[in-house]
Image (cartoon, rainbow, N blue to C red; front, side, top):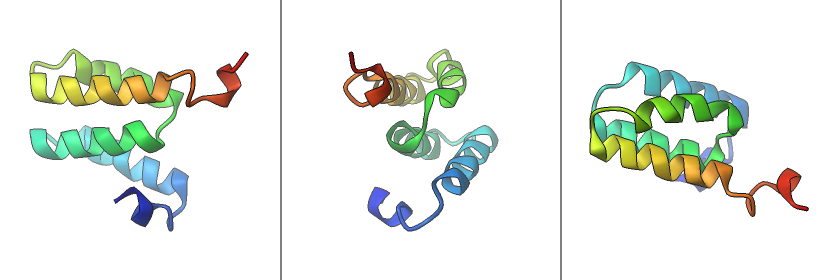
Amino acid sequence: MLERLAAFDRESVLSTLRTMLRANTHEGTCRIILDVLGHIGNKSDLAQLNEFIASGSEFVANAAFDAKQRLTDPLRLPDQWY
């Protein structure tokens, strides 16, 4: 799925994902959006991910935690290489 998204403007995709995430309550859909956000998102998404980590659903919280781990991985972020 990520390969298909590469054809679109990254910021447009992120904006759409963020909007969908705020509007969606279905756990399965939230998990998919969180997974994609973890691959193409950025540090500005961390606050929203923290909200989902604190959510009552373990299923959604785990997906949000995985996404946060990917976004904060120091090996993935060249600006944090020393």
